[in-house]
Image 1 (cartoon, rainbow, N blue to C red):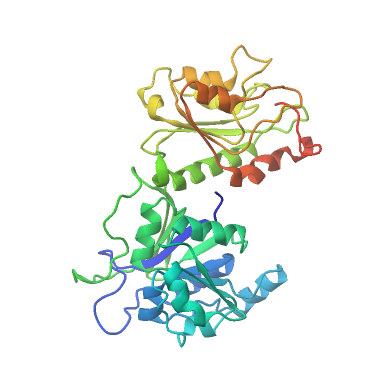
Image 2 (image 1 turned 60 degrees about the horizontal axis):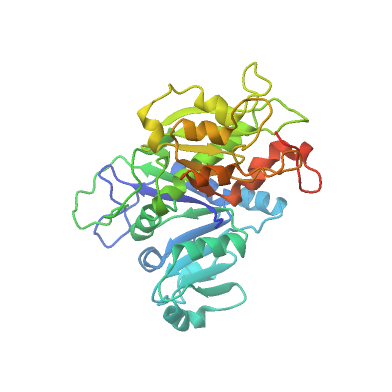
Length: 384
């Protein structure tokens, strides 16, 4: 199910701690990084912290810049992002600053926790139960579908970060690394033990912000189950970006494709009509760049912004057959190919019948169709 882009944000010491064991909060960031965080907050629809962070830090979670608040209002958004917390017990202090600053707030809790938190309900505070346990997927789906959140900033604490990362629900990690050590074994860490997504994450940015270093990573390794979710969203997003690079056409779709190894290594990418070939398809262009028989293909994933074709007149083999012949058995795509000119266009069905794992992420359909809007008629489009 669709859910927001989940951005985990934290400041850590050089040895990976969020705080020390002293009675006062350890300030890891400086003024320049606080302003950066304020800018990120202003770009998001909601900010989430765990109940433990409310108890220990008593945060306000505001956009402090008046100019940024004004810009949000000018864009038709509320001055402050929605404030979100998660508490299994529902045991939350009604006097905390979280409740008395900013705009709307929401508490996600258990069925029993909702009874305890019922007194928090008010004109700008909602309480939502997700069942006997806190269900993170239900939380994210509710934020996306009911509250319209498309970009969620998560500011802690370590338990929340760990749960979202190990369940494959984090799309981005932003770390501000401070030039100091904590060195206390019982101090809180950013991440605890757990089953994390396999492979290396992809570095997308590093820069100095005052005397701290901002590091941004995104998960990249495909796989199965929850751990693959963030990587699948990342790479399908790349495929959608490639679709926008296609030379325009009034008789063919614009499609992007990426082939990714099991360890998160990008093997190749391509897009429709790439190079000098006016009839090249995206999957075909990407696979052609990988040597036949590459052993990594057997465990690789093809990400395509459109369902791979099952029929085509311009080549002897459709893209679904090319994928299977290359040995790939996992495909992630955003939307189904319309059959206006190609009837029974069921590339996903052809792949699945041959034993391939086919995943459709409908939340990317809007991005995938954007380069093809000039082709759409009554919700349908000509074959590519």
